[in-house]
Image 1 (spheres, rainbow, N blue to C red):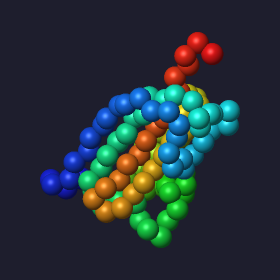
Image 2 (cartoon, helix red, strand yellow):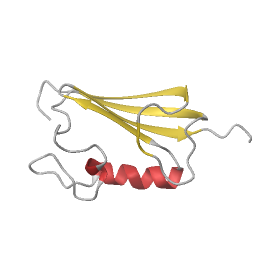
Image 3 (cartoon, rainbow, N blue to C red):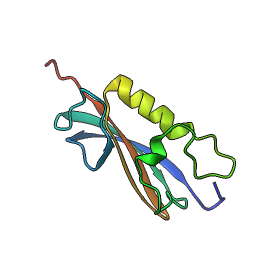
Image 4 (cartoon, rainbow, N blue to C red):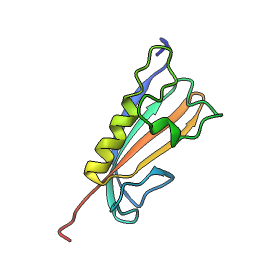
Length: 105
């Protein structure tokens, strides 16, 4: 990242999933979640590439990137049955993992 760019992580409670890009098999979209949101003020994802394609193994937008970061997020998403949401534009990208909360159900 460039010096003026920042990454922040926030966690909050939320009901329902907003803007899912990836929903693992068996995952709910309507329950309660702990929403882990990673906000990045960098250049964002390329407009000519679908956000779903960015989740594939070895998909990278960085010159020296490995393409493992978002792919790893999908592996965690599958294991936790936690949907992933992504919104991206230059200076304002959010990658969100919606971890389901089981309230005794």
